[in-house]
Image 1 (cartoon, rainbow over the protein chains, first blue to last red):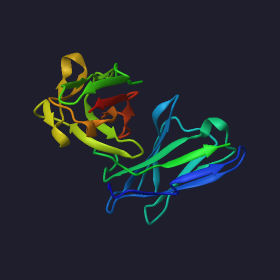
Image 2: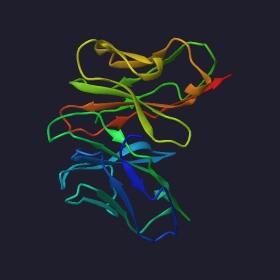
Image 3: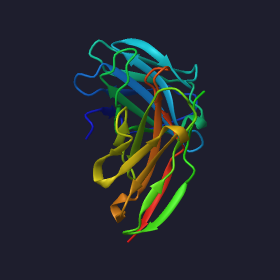
Amino acid sequence: DSGVTQTPKHLITATGQRVTLRCSPRSGDLSVYWYQQSLDQGLQFLIQYYNGEERAKGNILERFSAQQFPDLHSELNLSSLELGDSALYFCASSPTPPGGTDTQYFGPGTRLTVL
Amino acid sequence: AQSVSQHNHHVILSEAASLELGCNYSYGGTVNLFWYVQYPGQHLQLLLKYFSGDPLVKGIKGFEAEFIKSKFSFNLRKPSVQWSDTAEYFCAVINNNAGNMLTFGGGTRLMVKP
């Protein structure tokens, strides 16, 4: 158990819908990262938040957005869902301040299926 | 943009065989290197990491990896695999000049036959 929690574990929805994935980082970690794991794209970095502020963006679609709240939990919002958005979405956390590097610890993931 | 290559997509070994999984990265600057393992149906777990110092790093469950800067490589090794090592293995790199996001290789699926 890494200490990172994600809910829900599974999510099944239809095309065009909107969903919210939730992540709680390890105690004391200020950075939260979101990654997408799909069969065709592999594991890709989506976005990073540090202490409530967006710090880095990767291959995140405009239909996707995220935020980190004052209690440091984070939510990833996926809208206008398409079949190709079906994937495993991982959250990771680390204590890393801006400009530093550190180990990221991963949560169990949310498996999203878009029908 | 930096990239990470894992040349072996699928590896099948018998128990007690030795394992070496290749990992090469493209970035020439300072990097931090990781190997993560994903057991079936589970999340990514850190096996080992290299930040600096001794290029031969030892991780959990008898795994080790060697950082060879001149070859841009960070190969994972285990002298004798067990059936419980069946999993997918991911090499990942952090480019110290590009924030803390991980760039992952495509993964190597290892099957160990009992």
